[in-house]
Length: 276
Image (cartoon, rainbow, N blue to C red):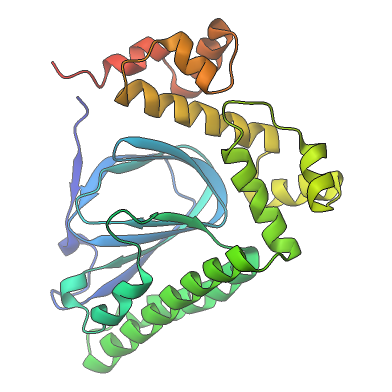
């Protein structure tokens, strides 16, 4: 089994009473499996990679927001120009947490969501303000840090809710991510998607590449391989069945593609998670 790096709040927060701090990673290198004694909101502001999170693996791209709790195990791999804005916080130190928790997913709620480019731009200014104030130890700065953090939480939550309701051009593009997630086991036809949503194929390809630094086909392949890796580590299904469930009719081809991404065969990957 893989060793887990333990991260402590003492290494990141300016004082024992500080409730929040900001760690910006431009660019984030691959980072080993770790857990920490604080909560974290990760905003992917550029690039892409693979996020290993507890027992699941997902591709991450520009616009993803991750709500990581104290004790969660996670790491980053296969990174490509990945920029992260990490907001670290300690709920027990937040005087406004009774209000904040209404804007933070918990229990069985989805802890990964997407926001649009416009919201990302708005967040950059707020995160810069939070970064400055969170490095100060006076009471007024700590209170202001909490107020800015609450504003960030509400902005993310409101944007996500509005995108689920409004069918703007931006939300149509975001719906592409949803369609791709639903196409892991079957063929995806971009022309059909664009016809249904009244979008130009060339524009969708261009905007998608700008946002993720990947083509649509590359993103879909990452989705499929991440789902396959999750199934390999959490089920006893045969490699052939997993290949089919993840959109690969040829298990030999699946093994070849899997090996290029994870540097091992599917069987070797599964063996790492078998309890001895």
